[in-house]
Length: 168
Image (cartoon, rainbow, N blue to C red; front, side):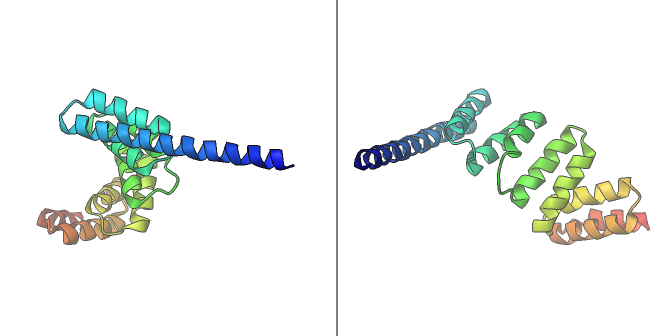
């Protein structure tokens, strides 16, 4: 019995050390990726983010950075793959998912992602604007006006107020 407890303690200790090493390795690759991205070497940045992710697959920061880079590189399918596994998605992640789905032409998924973003942060300019665009597309004019009004008020963009006026 004592031997079994000793072995169990060693296994737990080894697992904790491996987890700490994996975390440090992920941070190292993440830092390298950020530097590569700042230097404009996007291919190497993607490589380093993906390596970081292999050591910490559920890292919010790594997935956010990688997915955003994919979006900036016009690789929306890869961005979606980076964002979807995040367990506790924030409004920011849902908004970025909306962008990625929209870029893929997946309007139903995009609108749903924007709605989820809006449910957490109803003042985001882009989220309100995109929901307004989808509402106009579906001829839900009053709903569109509501979203455009918020986007215009928050941004101070009077052109959006003009768009609202043209709808009526």
